[in-house]
Image (cartoon, rainbow, N blue to C red; front, top):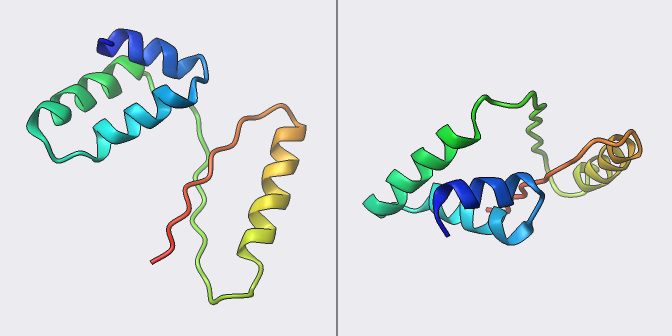
Length: 87
């Protein structure tokens, strides 16, 4: 799949395309870096997006907040992505 096809498939909401794009962006291989840059340029102009970072001790309600906030946004017809990192 070339980068243009990947970008179009990604924009259509295909999860496999998203996984492939994440792999390219996170990779340290030189060929992947070139492809990732091309992909990001193909996807430009940037879309309006809201980014929220959450941190806190266990049990303070981070997951509950993410679920409630995500449900509220999807009820409004918006799309939501969550990237969770557990060190």
